[in-house]
Length: 465
RNA sequence: UCCCUAGUAGCUCAGUUGGUUAGAGCAUCUGACUGUUAAUCAGAGGGUCGUAGGUUCAAGUCCUACCUGGGGAGCCA
Image 1 (cartoon, rainbow, N blue to C red):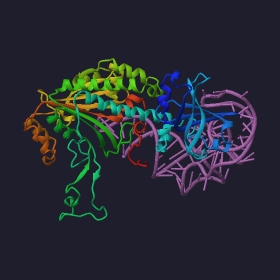
Image 2 (image 1 turned 90 degrees about the vertical axis):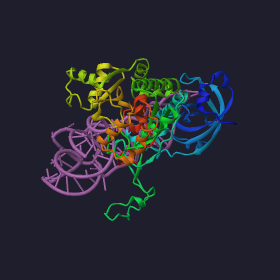
Image 3 (image 1 turned 90 degrees about the horizontal axis):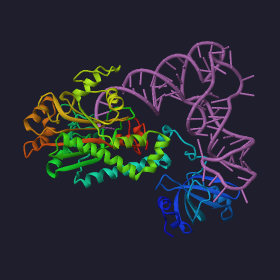
Image 4 (image 1 turned 135 degrees about the horizontal axis):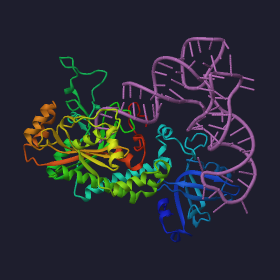
C-alpha cells in the first residue's frame, strides 16, 4: 500500500476518500484514551492539521498501545471514514499500526500544552515538531520558493556570489575570519605580524558580509540578476532583529534608475505577501490566532496600499514638526533612529514608507551622488513593526566620482580595483537592493524574535545546535 | 557593548514586612470512564529555590559578584 501525506487526504473531497484504505506515517501529537477506544492526533509535517486516528482497543495489544505516546513515530494502515464529530470531516480507522520510534513520556520535553518560545529555543532540535515552528518553517520554505519564482518569471538570473571573500569592502560590519593556519603555531613575518601568505589562499580571508559588489558584476553582463545566500556578521548584536548568520536577497539590475528600483522593491514585497496568502493561509491563520491578531489584516493592508515615497529631507521636516518627544534630536544630517522610523511608518503614514536621497555621509561609498553633491540616490523601505527591511540605491556609475568616494572613505584600492574597472569598461546606470530574509520572515509571520524564524539561529554565545 | 528585568518541580508560575515540613495548574505515573479533540474525574510521585560568597538567631525572600534567559538601545539586513 502506497503511503499518502496527510495534507493530500485532508484537502481531498471527502467523497473521494471515504471508504478507501490508506497508509499514513507521522508523529503522534496526542493520544486520548477511553475505555474501549483511543484517538491519536497524527501530524506528518505536510500541514498544520492533524489526522485523527481511531484505535479500537480490541484490535491491539494493551502494552503496545502504551508505547504510542506524544512524540512517537508511527505508520498506520486503515480505512478513511466520515467522522461523527464536528471537528474534522474525516478520520482513519486503524487496522495495523507500526511503531517506528518511541518517545518515552517521562523524558520527551514537548507536551500537549503550549510552551514558551524561550523554552523551545533551548530545544531547537525538537521545536520543528510543534505547531508553531512547523507553520514557520513551512512559510519559510514557501517564501524562499516565491522569491526564486518572482525573479525567474521576470527574467532575472540567480547569480552565485562567493561565501569566502578577502575584505569588508562595504564596511557592513565585523567579519568572521576564515583560515587553515594552525592557531597554536601561527607563522609570523619579520615584523612579527601574522604571515597570511602561508594561509590557504595566501591572503587574509573572511566570510562574506554582502554579495552586492560581486552581484553588480553579474548585472553588468547578464542584465538582471539576484543573489540569495547566507551572509555573516560578527557584530556583538544582542537584539530581536540580528543574527550572526542570516540569508540575504540582493537583486542588481542594469539600466534601472532609483525609481525603477523602488518600483521593483514594492512589487517584490507585494508579490511575496500575495504568494504566501495564497499558499500558506492555514499556517498564517494559525500564527494570527496564536501570536499576532493583526497579522492577516496587516499583510492585506500592505498588499493593497501604495507605499509612501519621500525624501530624507522631507522626512526630517515631518519629524521636526511632529511635537514628539524623541530621545535622539532631529537635524538634517543625522542617521534616523528606530524611534524616528517607527513614528513615520506606524504613526504618521500608517503604511510602508520608502525613504530616498539620504546625506552621502551616512551612506555607503557606492551609492550614486545626486546633482546637489550632498545626497545620494539611496532608498530604504520601512515597514510596520520591523523597521528597515530593504536598503538599496542606484549605484555610482561614473568612474571619477566613484574613485573620489572610494578615496574619501579610505577603501583600500587593492580590495576594489576590480569593482572600479566595471566603471571603466562599458559602465551603465544600474541599481539594486538588499532584503534580509529573516527580517522579512518576522514581518510575514508576526514573530517578535528573529531567533524564531530560522531553524538554527546563530547569535553571540549561541551555537548549540 | 550599555540600560532595565527575571532565574523556585519536566513546563508555566505563586510564595506577604526575612520566621515551622516551599505551593498551584499543566505534564508524568496509577485507576475510573461507550467517541475524544488542550478529553474529563480520583489518587500518587516529583524541588540542595541559577552559581559562589556575605549580612542575620533565622535567607526562596536582603547585599555583592558571576552565569544564563528576556526586553530596550546602539550597529544594521
